[in-house]
Image 1 (spheres, rainbow, N blue to C red):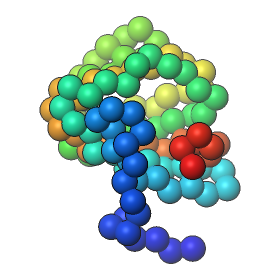
Image 2: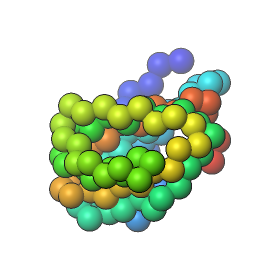
Image 3: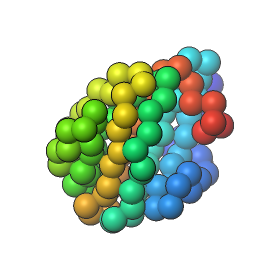
Image 4: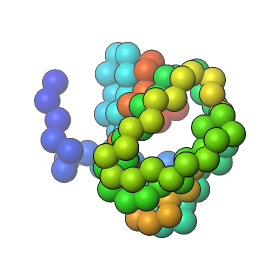
Length: 105
């Protein structure tokens, strides 16, 4: 299968988080455009996650520790670890999940 990102429709998954989502049998990739001040509440999931900040400044809390991440930073989030975030500026983020995030289909 071949896709082009420009042809994938964007979905607002939560307020201020617009994602273009790609799924395979064992993983999901989310290309996010996040509006300044948009928040993702604290949560945890069974999926392993890798977050890449492609553009902007993103405040991220993982297991109670808060840091600000900038363009180029990568965070690895183990399954079942509590995390939350807030866009300090407009951001572009890339999330990779394994296994597939079925609720994002």
